[in-house]
Every structure is written in C-alpha cells, then in structure tokens.
Length: 350
Ligand code: DAH
Image (cartoon, rainbow, N blue to C red; front, side, top):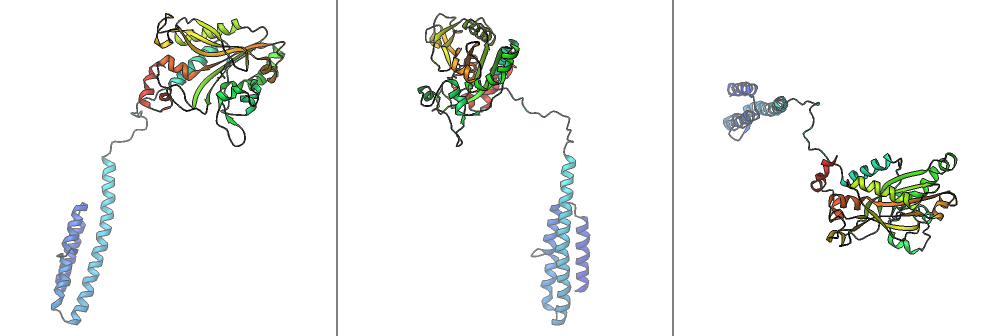
C-alpha cells in the first residue's frame, strides 16, 4: 500500500508540474481527488487493512490529500496570473498620442447665435459682461421701475430662494450693476456705456412648444449724451443684418415695459416671404423680434446716472427665439432636450 501511495504522490507531482492550463489542472484535480480519483481510491482501499495499519496509512493518505488540495490551489493561482499576463501581452500596445476615435461634439445652436451676436457687438465697441443667475428683488424689479405689487411682475414669475433672492427672470436684472460699474468712466472720462450681457433666464411657466422655464436672452445698453431712438434703430438693424446675413428692414411698434420710456417692440421683415405676407409671419410681412426702448429716467437714477444729462437705449434680445428663427427650430423644448442627434446638426456653422 505504501508503494502505491508513493507512486500516486509522484505521478500527481509530475502531472501537476506539467499542467499548462486551468483545464488541465481541473482534469488533474478530478483524476486524483474526484469521487473515483487515485487518492480517493487509496482511502477506499483501506478497508482491508488492520486497525493499526489503517491509522498509520490513513494518516499518510490524508496528509497527501491535503497537500494535493493545497498544491492545486497554488497552481491555480499561478496559472490564472499567467493567463492574465498572456491576455495583456496579446493586446495591442496602447499609444497615448493616438487621438481618440470619438465623434466630434458640437456647439449648441444658442451658443452659436450668442457668439455671433457677441462678435458683432464687440466690433461696434460694446463690452460683453457676465452676470449672476441669482439676483436680488431690487436688481430684477425695483431698480427697473417695477415696484412690489406692480402688475408687470405677473409676467415674470420666477423661482425664489429661501433667502429672498431669485433666479433672474430677464437679463435686464443686470442693468443696475452695469450702470454702477461704468458710471464713473462715463461721467469723469466721457466714455459712453456700451455693454451687452447674455445670460440664462428663468420663469415659472408651464412649458409648451413656445414656452420654457429656462431660456436665454441678451440685454444691451448704450448710455451717453444725446443718445436717441435713431441710435437704437441703427445698432439693431446693423446687428440683425449681420446675424441673418441679409439686409433686414426693422420697424418699431409701441410696447410697454416699465423700465423704458418710450418702449417698443422691434419687428424685422419676414425672410420667408420678403415682406409680402405668409403663414410664418401671420401674413403681416413682419416678425416680432426684440423689445427695446429709451431707458427710463428712474432706471438711470437708480444706477447713479443723471437723466438730465444722459440718455440711453436698452434692448432685450431673446437669444433662444433668435436661434429658433435662424435655424428653423419649431419646438423650444428641443433646445433644452440634450438630444445630441438634433443638436449636432448645427456643427457646420463653426
Ligand atoms: N426684460 C424684458 C423681458 O424679458 C425685455 C426687455 C424689454 C428688455 C425692453 C429691454 C427693453 O431692455 O428695453 O420681458
């Protein structure tokens, strides 16, 4: 029996040393430790031995069984590691300098329109200002001649924070800060205030194809001595002709906004019918584009500017609306949808 045990031990060790794969290892495990395996058979063969021999031989077989189990586990670990190394070795070498094969991202249509407007206004000497999305009631309303309980607030219901601040409902909310920032250059150095401030605006609105609770506007102001409505018309016409890449006609209709006096709705001639009248312009030949007006004396005063000495114009261009018109987007919600498929089609413009 002991020779048999030595023989089993030897052949186990030889086979184990030769095993090259996990499959081979599993076969070895079954052929030695499985139900009919050689080591298991040795244990079964003990039934004919005397009690003494059983004790002695049984002990040895158990030692062999434990050693074999342990060695198989070790070998398994070793083979697994080798397998991983083999896998890594068979992978193509990773070259950090190779550009990733990802399709190019694209600019959002509103970003494209915003940049276009910024470029045009910068070329006409305007500064581009950035302003916070969270503002005070004073900035958004009071400083714009919209006192508490004024009905004009109904149109601009927005989201209020617990500290009384709010998400700005229009870019006009930055006007007051802009006047204060530039007034000394205006008064002391005679530099006109010429600034635009694009930004995200919020309103507590139910959404549909034409309304969103989040949208973009671009406010513009110019303040100096003797600024008149003619200046306003000139800048708007120049800017819009550049944006639409054609000579647009503009017209002003009266409009009411508490922070301008007089206030207007600025329309542009319809590009689709050339002014003849079509369904897109509701057969009027004109499209409503941008509210504007001459800055109200009270608003200038709140900004620290003497309305007896200075006048100015302001406009609030709906960037979201402009993007929709320029790119023919029919549903405003598409612009906030994050749908890369619909947004990526505008990439070519840049
Ligand atoms: N802030 C106004 C709104 O969102 C738009 C507006 C009207 C801005 C007239 C102006 C302006 O600067 O002069 O409804």
